[in-house]
Length: 281
Image (cartoon, rainbow, N blue to C red):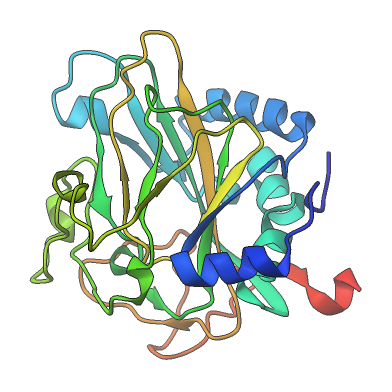
């Protein structure tokens, strides 16, 4: 299994990421990682570990077909996920695109939409959901299956990370604990013909990854394929400018770090260092 990206990340890639707030990087993970983590996802979807944090979106919303499953902070209790967030190409990809000399794990998140799952991923951006702020935070979303328009391909609004917006957290299963007075994110699906917005999406092969800034607005339709699953792991990393910001209506972090607002999250137990420039050199 490869520890570094299989393909180089160029200066042009970095500029595109900074401009658009998202980039698709092709073929960065070898087949061994994809097979291992695909099996790991299957195994943890119905695990009864006390640290597991499943969200069964289809069930919560009363859906009749398919299954939209989310699980978070899996690396705290599963060895395959721990190895993946610490030793796969994820952290080096994050460091390169953030220009960071040190990268820590924030958390990992599993997303599975089985065939015939109609539940969409509402338009949103991530940062309002998190008790953290900073520019050096991003998500590496790795496709474990091929992804196309029929099985819930992600879509982004280019440059939306620069709008200065902070939309209300959008929770797939509509959890009322995350309600706030923040502005609701528009349904950008209704605005595709508007020349003020540039939409980006990519068909993907397993082993490709999307990397996005936490304020880049994105969403996805349901998985309307009768046969094709969509499975992915999104791992969130942060660099040195990130700081703790425990606002109301943000998620609880597994490990319950005791941090002061404005403090850099340097709890090695909860946010381990996954990459350092000095060690890589």
